[in-house]
Image (tube, rainbow, N blue to C red; front, top):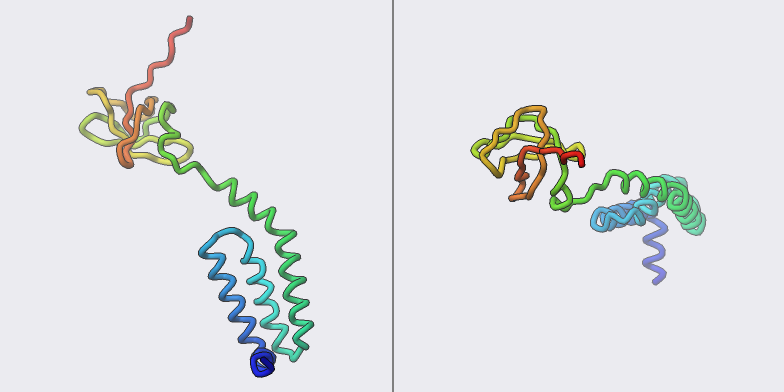
Length: 156
């Protein structure tokens, strides 16, 4: 055991770099915004350990830097990432009304924009829907929205 401790102390920058890489790899696999802060803490200690700082100080620096990053920046990063996420279910756009960007017909696919995302679209009836007109998404077939010309509801 003393031999292992001796190696860690002697090659401390390499040890901490290994810890940093391991934690970054775990973060890349899990994408949980947990281990990345500890990877940054280990990266800081890589440089600290180059100045022959005692091992217990290195561990304290690692813990303090990691916890500060975790506590102060994780909520901010989580909020930013959660705002960027959009539902992946293509069924969530069925029933939506969208503007046509390229002419859509039953034989020629065009495009439309829903939630800021452009979709390939094909008419489910024989109608041709021109650029700028509105269409209603009736279904999804693969990566293509099946649409029909939008008819606004009649006032009662």
